[in-house]
Amino acid sequence: MPSLREIRQKIRAVGAQQRIFKAMKMIAAARMRKSQSAILAARPFAIKMEQLVRELALRGGRDESGLVQSLHHPFFEARPEDGPVALVLVTADKGLCGAFNANLIRGATEWFKAHRSRKVYMVAVGRKGRDFLHRIRGFDFEILNEMAGVFPKVHFSHAEILGKTLIDAFEEKKLSKVSVLYNEFKSVAAQKLVNVQILPVPPFSQSERADSLADYGFEPGQEELLSALLPRYIKAQLYRILLESQAAELAARMNAMDAASKNAKELRETLNLGLNRQRQAIITKEIAELVGGAEALAA
Image (cartoon, rainbow, N blue to C red; front, side, top):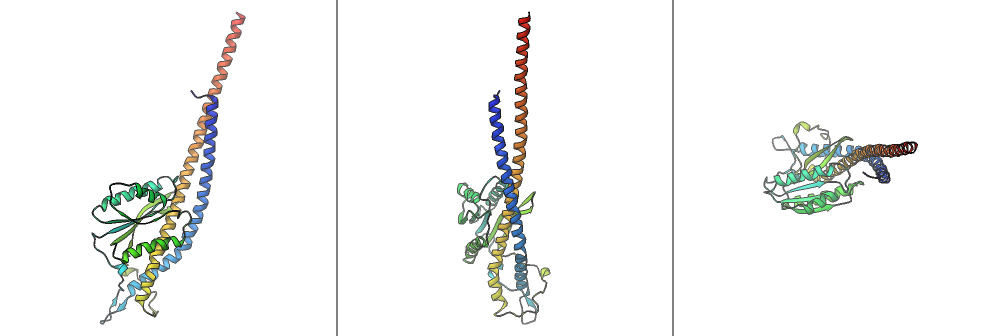
């Protein structure tokens, strides 16, 4: 049985940990609110960019018979199904965020298993993903790029670097498909593991066309404008993904620290209860010894 001194030391240690967990929870909550604001600020730009690209791609021009034809671009062209593929794994730079990183690593492992027969390229965003790629065995892949220290201060320059890596490899016919695996921010209590295709750009449906550009003329032309916009569109999507992942990580860390703080509080209460019981047992024993001694003297 531990002594009273040892129990008091444990209580002090647990109390210190509880204060650390509470502080980390408050920091994560403050950063998450900023991250949510960044997502809301970037959303109108991303929506307008997608709308413009969609309208340009679907509007096209007219052929000799007068029928509207969609514009063509290499970023829309489907590549061979058995060609090289790339996965961008977006993890956190740090731990202490529950199952955030574990779910991503599990998802990446399953993705590796599903693409054993193809040439695989990887891009790691976040230290946890980078470390995972360096230690994993049994899979053959090549690392295109590594980006650590991105979170929790995501900037559009990070999306530009990431986008340039992917676009250059795609334009060189090095890749037939590019996907991103990340945790999407749904709410403070929920994050969803998402695997989304970035390249080739998924085709737009004619039903999505709004004809918002019907009255505009283009100089030098629609094809040139689309070619200039598509790289920016891809980088805007990547920026949104990085912001989503950042918010999801901070929400997961806030929840993990909240749970850890509650567990520390319960442990401290249990230790205090054990301390009081042991003190009471010692006092009761001493009283019993005194009473027994007094009775012996009286006899």
